[in-house]
Length: 254
Ligand code: CDP
Image: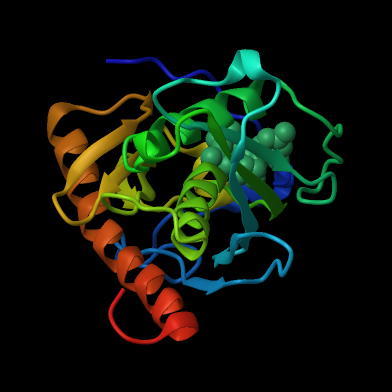
């Protein structure tokens, strides 16, 4: 088991934490969802006209924009790879995205999320097609309510598809977790703050292959399996919304 450090209580008042009831007697969560239910997800492509590809995602109260530029020649030359393109991924939370003002610029958390996002996307993008090139992926979190890395990875996948970058599949990122001893899909902010575990995963919907997994907290084998199953089911639901967004912009089969 992996021990989870106490979570930050940013954005949740102490009064709210005292009275916060995670589920009622019918298993309905504070925000009206069942245990295996996602927050509402909406996606729109082509929202940044100057980018080669872009996507806006609203995921519960989370909101993010991903923009893709390239492929372009990689500069300086020392970063070039002779046999393939590099992905230059930057995840950033806007200073106004949470109740506490975020200090602008890169920090340890944004570096870590940028890296896991790049690693997940590298497993699907056909980088060998573009030697010595760079594909720039910018993810900006506009409003944060827990689960922003999943939001960012999913939006970036759609933005890459919108840019016409060849990929073997789109990465769908979702997270189940545990709160008050119950495995729950897609933790919202209070559930994330007071919960015991979080399991973000990156899933390829065509094969159910896993391209990233980060576990934070305590889960038994049975809970881990249930969280995994919830994630795979949710990934297919989100994939449908991703495809619909691309179809709305381009029509036909995607
Ligand atoms: O966003 P995600 O769940 O992927 O990452 P996290 O590090 O587990 O952060 C959980 C949530 O804490 C974020 O979605 C934000 O709502 C909040 N947070 C914040 O308010 N200020 C920060 N500097 C970092 C996170």
